[in-house]
Length: 219
Image 1 (cartoon, helix red, strand yellow):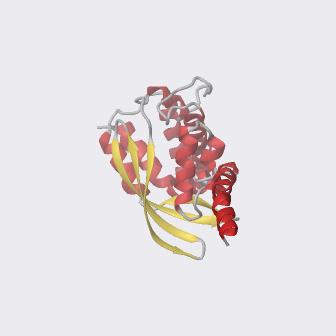
Image 2 (cartoon, helix red, strand yellow; image 1 turned 180 degrees about the vertical axis):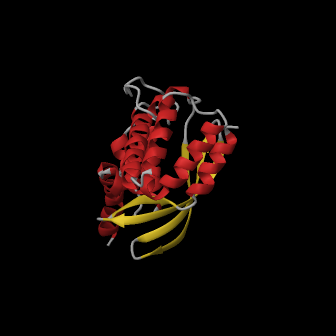
Image 3 (cartoon, rainbow, N blue to C red; image 1 turned 30 degrees about the vertical axis):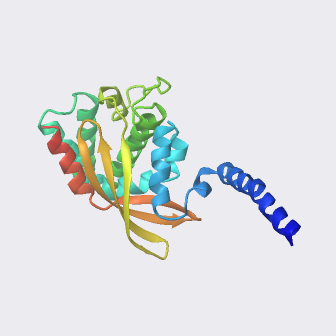
């Protein structure tokens, strides 16, 4: 009896390191606790590691931009009207957007916005701008929105998880807070979906409010 008990106790120290090693060798998405908040954790880790591939594991950029394109354009126009956006590429973007909207080419408008926002996010993450550590690895070559990255205040952007509001059949609603070192804190209401076992942010449910708040801050 004594030898059996002794061997069991002796086996514990060897078992625990093996378990920890297995945990840390898992891919990022698997190592995090499964659930809607996984998406936010992956996005933040992507920002901190300057890794847009990891960042994109937590968000469907195309879906988010498509569903909030009208609110985003309204915020850009508000900032442009108050003189808080640089002349040139941004003005051109808004002009093309207005032409597309007035001609009924909504699909083209959304496609253009998705492309621009994706370029902005990928360049911001990979270039270390959102982590507050610009690394010079990304050359944005005058891309419309990405060209504004170098004018951003240096500092770490954070996505702070809040709580899960609802979660049913692979679709969840969660709260979070976006923290910008210059602009401040912005509450977020996010729609998150589970796709092939991985959670992704698919919509900013309070996009109009957030973008308007950001625009007002710039005045």
